[in-house]
Image 1 (cartoon, rainbow, N blue to C red):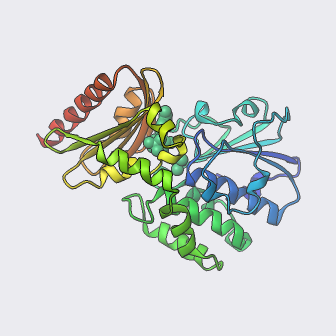
Image 2: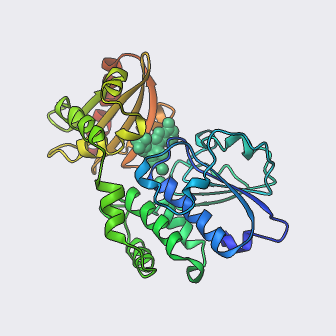
Image 3: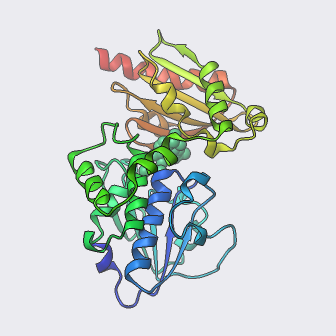
Length: 320
Ligand code: AMP
Ligand code: MN
Ligand code: MN
């Protein structure tokens, strides 16, 4: 794959940057990182399409330039999709994908089929922020770009904790720190600090969590009524499934929240023994070996029964 600077041939004048639906820290950080890199080094017409995200990520420079719900109707010379595991998961920028003259996909999901003209997918990277950094000229990465990419890596690595973190991740993080960013404030303000309501709903989910399969599996469910009561939206539920997984003895954590009557968004996290991307893919979703998601229909009872059945199968096969 060519570096970003090589893709920007002289006939590329208009660019769309597109993230995935329900954008997380990696998605927002990578999209804003690329936007800042282009702003610092080129004079191009760049639009960025991202759905609503947590206010704590708004510190990134130019985040006020993100397109809201308006439809620009533009046809772009180049569209770059970041952190999108498949075409249908592109958020509101999806409509520009089919009309763009050239498309590029930069990602780290093992389940990504490579849906663009040019694909750079590295499933060994802990974050798309890391994949993007490899495609930039480090000399041209300014402080603001570094802030965005550091945020991306911090969020998808659980602050450099997950097994997806490699020596290369730390080298890149070191280079980003070298740009003079306030790295401890990024971790404190964007990863650990939560609104009072977010903390309350996290507490509620932990309080009502249930262990099954002799404590190897834990699940919790937040209903639409709960979300209304605590005045939170889905983006405020990020982090709950990781908190569930941190329970001693747990191999797999399941977190559900209600998206419609008899419909749940499912988040799965595993420790060592279960590949949750296989389970999510079976139910029409996807993700990584230790972090995956899908949407399922039916009662909570049925959803949990189906998921735990699949988890049990894998645990049994692994134990043989
Ligand atoms: P989540 O549990 O939503 O935080 O997602 C965990 C991982 O699985 C992320 O990398 C997502 O991109 C991926 N993922 C979540 N939901 C889906 C889905 N419906 N289809 C494909 N991938 C998904
Ligand atoms: Mn993401
Ligand atoms: Mn990611």
